[in-house]
Length: 486
Image 1 (tube, rainbow, N blue to C red):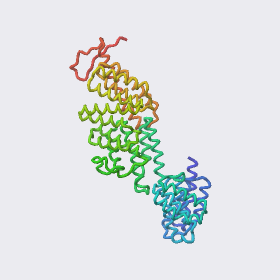
Image 2: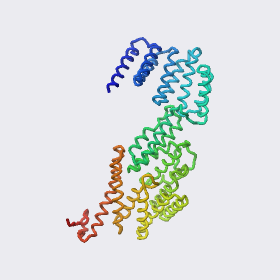
Image 3: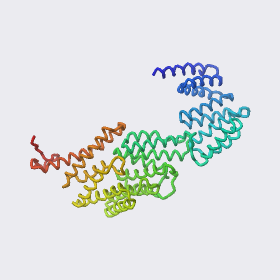
Image 4: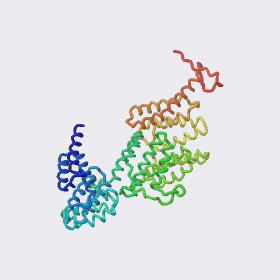
């Protein structure tokens, strides 16, 4: 705290006398000396405040000397490299060029430096075509001023930009956002849904800030996909649906639901898989909120864009669930069976187990047959034994689902077994969680259903004991009275 106070005092002492409205306009060389003193002392906060104040004061003048171009260029490079604020860097470089314009002929070195500062800011913002053109225009003057080696390095960088690629010299906001989205993915995989939403919010890019519009659309669609998935698993399905439906319009044109085969408004390119997930989770949220109309086109879009990472199994499961919701049992059965065939053809053990599990779950729910119950129980035990937090399926979720389906069945002992195991794992996860409060609250809310299943199953099982008194079935709100010997 003392260091912050001292830095603030230094800034006030330097800025206020030099830049007060009533004082003579500061000499640019004095500004450079004072700013360099702060920089040399590694007081970057003081440097930032001083330079910002100096530039604000300079903007109030009708005309500026050529030396001010160096101040604008120096600060542009600082905010681009230190603050990763390329939109502001571009604005500063372009302002500096405007102030230098009347003096450009006799200040070729300054003109070259400002042009190249602008070029790098353009590339950071994904505006590669403009960056390439501007760099090639600036290169002769830059070579004359800075020498062959630096000019050749610039041309090498231009080759990458010409292919639409960033380089190690870039601080592209879109690339920084993608790095954040990777962290959001990792949080989702850990089940830290609150953390994932916080990170995804940081990754969203502003419109109209100079960043390439297509890059903004791709990154924001990817961020929405992470947020929507997190909301879904926190049980906030209505919010997930609304968010993902809006997010689809980053990539697809209005009315895409009527023509999902039509050309996309923005090609997803490197975000194709994130966009795939966006449409998939939109379909899942549509199922759970009874917005069934959006499920077929959303799944069609997901299947079209998927590179194989998502795979046909989740899509088949979602489609089959829709058929069930629409009371088309034959179509649902066929889709679940097709998913098994697809998984077995792929040869991935975890996907095979998952596809067989969903088929068994549906068949038991529809028939109540002992054979189907035993198949479901056997699969659940196998998946619980082989599953972990790195498998294709979540063993805790599998046990929870089976426990709910077996509730009030002759297999209450197995339902209790699965509910206890799932609850134990859920509670261990909550106690060990480093998620945000909103994420932890969501996990607790999701656990309540499992607790209710466990208690209801245990009560039903104990109600079959000789010591249970179930003689008052007409009393609403009461179950059996169970007496225990202590």
